[in-house]
Length: 254
View (cartoon, one colour):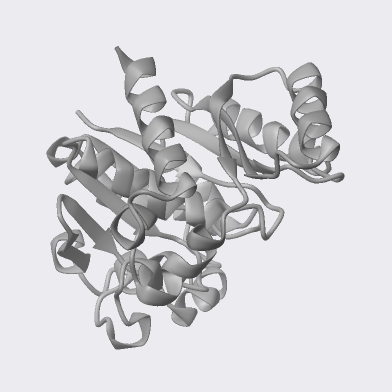
């Protein structure tokens, strides 16, 4: 059975979607079969895999409203060994649409359970908020991976996120674990990045991945071409870093 990982941080701009796209692609390059699920109404992960989010007929929105099956929502082989369930702005209305639904926290999990055995990893990109969509991702997931930007306010909001993870574990998904934290946008030229890493390691009671993701212009460019970094520029520092992170993740399973 595959492992399901929710990539989340309620702070925006921390490299969450970048990590979801490029970790998934690096895992696929390592020979793993991947399903990526875009639970962010912005649909940036969908675009990052080269899919026109506004032309997709069956997205996470239709899936959660029961307007299509998960088989109909899965877009197969958007990249080699990667399937996608897309998202677009329609998903922003889902909380209102499901306001009276009794088991709304488990809608996504109940769908994903049908296909979980087909994949080595299922990666969920979450919206930058602790919303119903994020809760759905956490009830679906086995673990939560938190990208942390190397900047002054890195710890702000992290305690709230960990509290939410613990609440979901206590009340909704006893199997949910903290996968750990990964540092993004690391700038080796500044003392601040190194200080943030040390501060988080000292204050965060969870695994911190050895791999740090550098601040890298090629990483920033790749989504506009609808390509993961290992396709856009496989020799870049960003591609190499996500390759190492994938190996670290796979190694942690064995």
